[in-house]
Image (cartoon, rainbow, N blue to C red; front, side, top):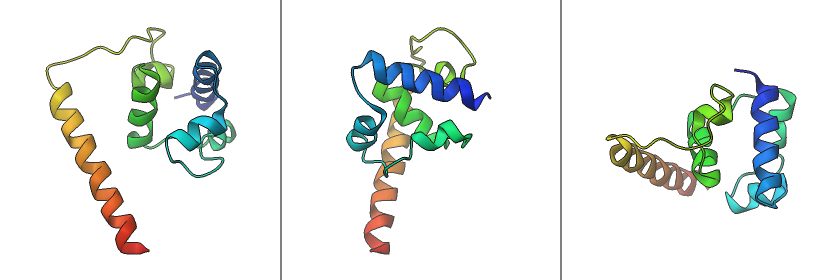
Length: 100
């Protein structure tokens, strides 16, 4: 994956939505500069990739530069995947509460 392409697409999606990278970070409750770090070559986690693709309504493959098609293709497994993602989010929140 080209991180340059990932950051370029992320920035373009922010611009198209009329939002700054910092505004998207705040809306998604990410730490400050979490998205700017991708400009420096950091690789997004799978969870962050899914969250960003859902936020912008594009496929993870588009964000990664693996396709030029923005449209997210729904599969028969999308409901199951969404359930798993929601469970992961709940587990992360519970872990964060425990660590405080």
